[in-house]
Every structure is written in structure tokens, then in C-alpha cells.
Length: 205
Image (cartoon, rainbow, N blue to C red):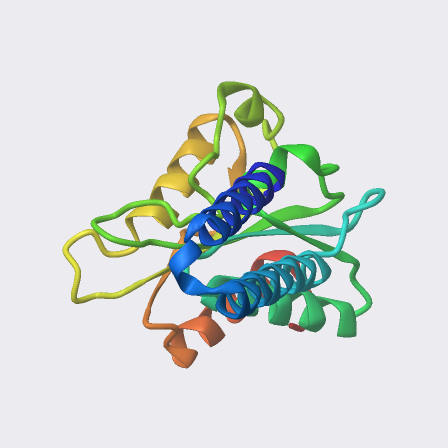
């Protein structure tokens, strides 16, 4: 995120410099173009701050660690709802992007993952840098469950979520139950996920 911010600022600075070199625009239009660019930079900065606020920092050991990989925001929304539901049952749950999973403390009870698939079975932007071999070594014997999101009309339905589950299991993590595959965030299948979690973890979510 820091690198992306620096790139945006560099592009804005370059564009502003080019605007001021266009003498035929006139000083009034040059100032107007500069103000528009500054306003755009402010909007980008506010969007970045909003995203950071939506993803609370994880501190200490929580009962559950919920990781999401999302392209459009659906997986993040479901992960946030999951955190709230667990909290209502007296459980602590931390939330993080899948790309930042290795930076978080391992949970006391289980790792819960909400993973979308994009394109032709590809990882979404918040999960495209996971895992590394070092990441996977941390999860030996750790209970986990995967809620895999996708669109059944695509041939690689839920491919990324299934891949995440497979890699964790191959690394020695222990699945609480088989990955639940959900097409277009079907509420009935999301509810089925909670039923599986309730049965496996013995919590009335």
C-alpha cells in the first residue's frame, strides 16, 4: 500500500508539472487543473484511510483469526459479519487480509478464511501474495475452515478458496470441515457455513 501511494503521488507530481508546461492553457486553466489534481489526491488519501480503518490491527491472541481475500468487497463484508457474530457469543476474533496473515498472531482456537475467486480461478488482490513456504509452516496442527466464494457459471468455481484449503491441509493444518462453496454469496449456503462452524466449534453462531 505504501508503494502504491508513492507511485500515485509521483504520477500526480509529473502530471502537474506537465500541465504547467502547457503554455497554451493559460494560467487560469493551469491553476484549475492543479486544483483538480489536488482534489483527486485528497480523495485517494481519504479512501486509503477508510480502508485502513476497516481493517483493525490485530494485537495479542484472539480465539479466532478471520482472514479474507476479496476483489469486490464481498468476502470482507462476510468476514466482518462473522467477526460480529462470534463477538455476540463472547468469542474474540481478529480480522485481516489474507496477504497480511503471516504478520498476525495465531489464534487460540481456529483460523477462519473467507476467500473469493476472480477471473479464471485466480486469487483476488488481497490474497495474491499468499502464501510463502514460511507462511505455511506456522499452521501445523492449527484448526481451520474455509468459506469459498465464487460464481458457479465459471468453470473454475471457487478455485482459489479450494486452493487455500488444500495448501493449509498439505502443510499440516487441520480442517474443521470441508470447504463450503458459495455461488454469488448465496445466503442459504452462507448460513450452512455457520451451521458447520457451530457443529465443529460448539458455538451457537
